[in-house]
Length: 158
Ligand code: HEC
Image (cartoon, rainbow, N blue to C red; front, side, top):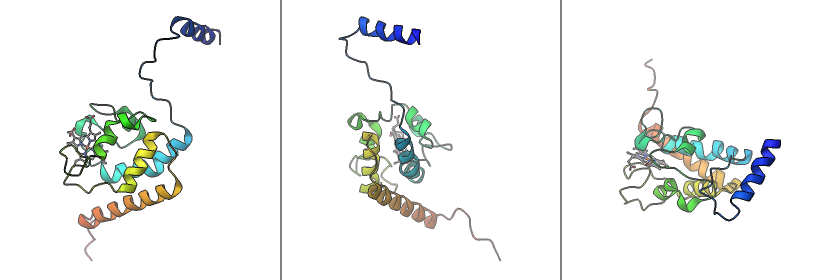
């Protein structure tokens, strides 16, 4: 307690005017963690983890857990509350024809609802329930399409 007080006083006295450096990421609230687990991680699992996960780590980036996502790859992914300086968001929102778009051109693109949910989350806002539902429906549709294209478990022979 004493040390804490001293540190506060010391900081105030030493640098009242100096602008803050890029603030370190604030911890996520329980509601933000729930949004991540219920909407964002499933979206990453369906659209990103094949290249950004345990098997491949393109751009040294993994998106298969909250911890890995926040850690970033060669570059930072995002800071909650600062959507306009997020490299991850920028690449997701590029035109589909752009060379840097994510997921890459040949892959199934994210839908508007999925992108909106991602933007809202990175903005640091709660994802409204109807948006969460619509984004999750699109994620499920993408998973179903992928499964139909390449069945993970071929049917057993009778
Ligand atoms: C088919 C493979 C593939 C998929 C699927 C894919 N990516 Fe990528 N991604 C790459 C490759 C390759 C790179 C590295 C080269 C580059 O930066 O363009 C990369 C790089 C990135 C980077 C930059 C990493 C850094 O720190 O420089 C981000 C951010 C990113 N991807 C986000 C995503 C997101 C979000 C998704 C899903 C919505 C996704 N990617 C899906 C292949 C993929």
